Image: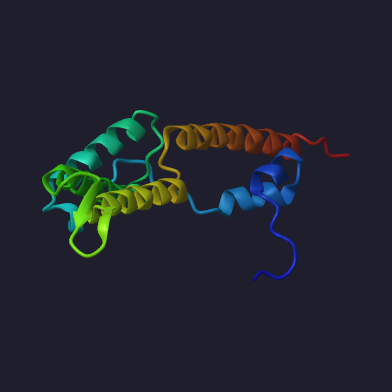
Length: 162
């Protein structure tokens, strides 16, 4: 539980003409532009590497990838690959519903695992903003922040001294 009000976002401070916003924008941590490498835990999983390449291609086309995105992309690719592997097991084990000797008709455990793996992937995608629309928003914010910071800097440096 946090105490007091939330911090005002830097972009809002810059847009409102605050010197504090400009100072904060110059000190905020920025990621390094570049292509992220897959993490070692997916190196042996060819399907996860294929999913990683698809994510890298789709999000990389927007030009907003940072080298620090490697972990998020790797975890997401592994979850999607796990969901795909479970999905392939469903027809081999009797379909979505199977007849259990004691319990009768039940949901296939592979179906449940596939659903859970996909839900994990969605959580990761949302947490790290790995959708194209989220990344488009990032590029829009980056352009707006740069133009806002430039306007603010120009405003404070072009003040006539009397």
